[in-house]
Image 1 (cartoon, helix red, strand yellow):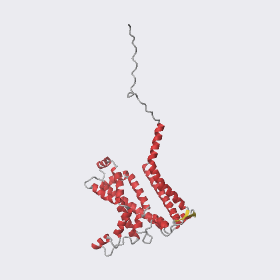
Image 2 (image 1 turned 120 degrees about the vertical axis):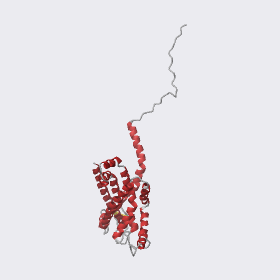
Image 3 (image 1 turned 180 degrees about the vertical axis):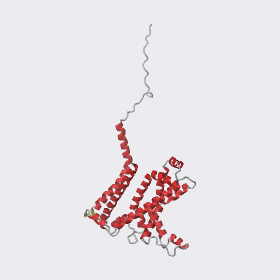
Image 4 (image 1 turned 180 degrees about the horizontal axis):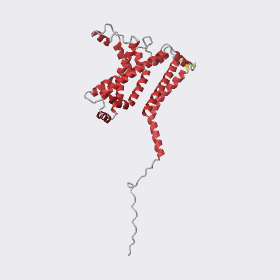
Length: 320
């Protein structure tokens, strides 16, 4: 009997061998998903800016165009009266001049000292970590707390500085650190330099450590001196860090308030009134005029925006 052979049937595919096809996402879907994820990550920062920056700026703009008293509230629109009265205030131009003077002095001294400290501690040595920490410790102290500390050091009744100078015979009477306009200015500058020198040292130190060591090695092989290396290599390559430090220092100095409010209260004879102190005085001391204070705040904000724009344009020009 002849046997009929039939072809073997294909084996049934087992579930374990079955391949599951994962649907591929289109490029447009991936882009939209990344955008949604990025928006989700950025939403806390956007909410923070909305609540603590955008909304206050809108409120200040409204107040600057209204006759707004601290105790009565909005008494109607009076734009642009508030801006004219703010500029016509007897302390407006003296406050502008003093603020600019203080900013120039503080910026030059602070950045020069910070650069010197950064150059000193950039070399790795046995005590380098201790020295860096010592310079950076004052930055951890709040500015108001540091101002109170220096107020005690400057007090004629309890000043340890005057007591030490009298003990060694340098002076006969206690020094009036805050009694004259010049002494009050330089005493405040000393406080700010002590408080912020370590912070700016750290910024410049990061910039110094980012410069390749091969550049300095090539300069030494070419016979360049330390001063030539500093002038031709270190300073040009350190421009981004110096520019950032300058912007931060100038902006912080123009908005100075805590140190003068604690140390001098604007005295003696209103000689140390900064522009931000004048805003505070218009709003909460004597005048209680929030409208004029808001108008002056808008003027200060506009000046800062123009100054920062000019600085950023200068930076972009250097990069080009």
